[in-house]
Image 1 (cartoon, rainbow, N blue to C red):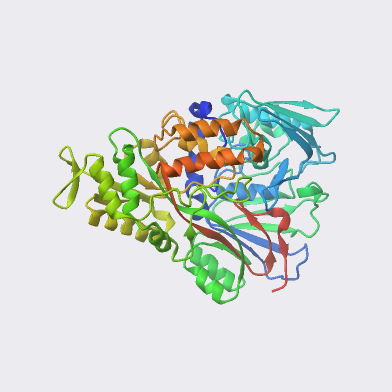
Image 2 (cartoon, one colour):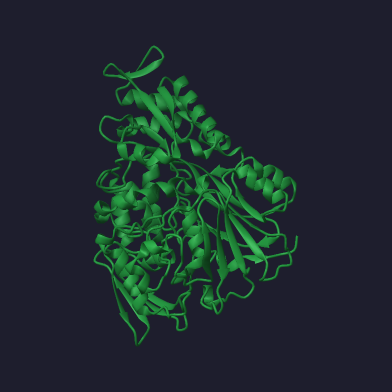
Length: 536
């Protein structure tokens, strides 16, 4: 889920088809395990196979509809993109050798010599056609607003090899969004479902075998030479096999036994891998965050209640419990590297741990302690804290600790476990008070659909948040291009935290362990161009 959004506030009514992406992003950073491994050969040569295990079947692989984080990761090996991100969040050339942009337009110059797997050239016409296909509401592509601005219109100039994308609303990260657009030749747009278990690849690999629920085999293409900064396929493994390994401990066992070469491990198995000296690459990602439901009649609609509930909690303690001591206090509200805006928007903006201050705030807001319970107008302060069960036992323990601290303070609190498959319906349905809901994105404007605009069913503002400062600052930031708006985006993020609309609690590293391979990672997983076999 991996996965992420980038829309304007005025476009929220088109977001319902992208709700699955939103929730996959909420949980995908911790719920989706990807293991990377190889066969018995460890000679580092291109001919040796590498097995890339995933925790669940990807479902459809069609690049204009695939939203599952496993599918997005797998597609990154088969489909290239116009641009790529460097480790510092800056852009580097991909299929586009150069570009220019304003807040409402971008122009990309397509490299010559780029081909799809059947040998046909990938041209500016193909790229423009894909933009327009996704932007057309009748195609109902969930990539609309994720990789393509909602109001985008693209035109190609074959002679200059340029694609010009314009929008009627500001799209401040229009070029950065292109990093999420898997490129395919125009002929496949006529029947995108045909790519559910096949490829029309523009990247370094093509799919040769698909056995759903078991494995997917990819073979390296000859002549690939348009990767990041014009890198080629030289040195990449000749074959990749994505194998479904549903259990994280099983993946760790296979890694330790040398039957695979790597795994994304998020739980207790990290300790034995560390003890065995297995190397890992990691990125820091938001792992724990509270989202308040501020709809009328919900306790979170009262800012005094939100701030009091947070003041009662020891957030550092909750974060330590949720991560087994492997996390650290969150400093961002969900932007995950590589991202252009990296400022600390959390530290100093949340209420401190002070139950006495919480009691004073509630009293000032008209609440009174009746016996052991806070009441107002004869009704007790009642809060349910929902959380996805697939984030593990440690998160469940942290939620129970929060419930205990609230109960001791005089709140009628309860834990509300929710299966990962029903988290979307829970948030969209509105029958919840507080949710453990970390949202991970790459670009700050991708958060606006969750924290501004209409609530479900018209939009994805699950908490019914109305924050005037966030709305104003996000609008100002949207008029800037790329990183030039970061100061405004960071001020907007901080406004949400100060009003306790959201409560970022803890981040933790996503660790990809490797044995017999080397690689680098980003928020989507292993960066394809960096994967190499190695000795050991």
